[in-house]
Image 1 (cartoon, rainbow, N blue to C red):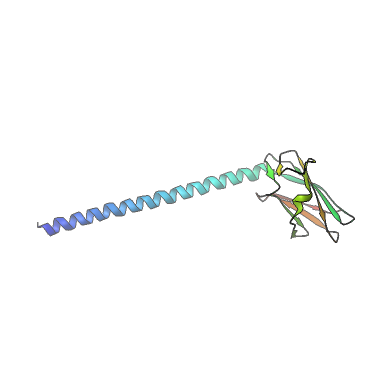
Image 2: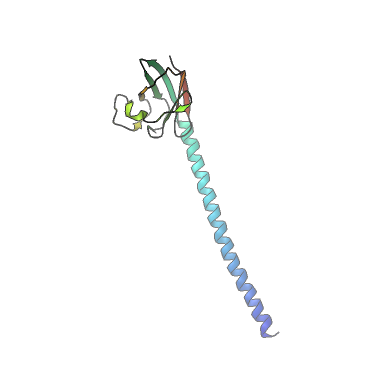
Length: 143
């Protein structure tokens, strides 16, 4: 055997070693990303199971819609993560007229507390929907 056979064998083995190193790094990073995504999904499912809201009352009078919503689940919610839809129209700026158990300066909505909000509307709506950041929602017919 000459040097060319030994040299080419060494080059092939070195190439295989480098290729295995790159393959191992790529597969380890992919496995870690998949594992992190599965953990995030598990956390989201737990948040969804622990979240429950109940729109107890929605009334329209003299151009003002008043909505009362109870946090009946075990999750802490935020006003920033809560959305209000009136007749399927997303409402913005409603947080300025919202209060949690009478406190208009908080963003935190803890279990057992009531969110009360008021919106100025031109016409009487037929229904209102309140949705949380985890996708849990409740709908009420406006009286």
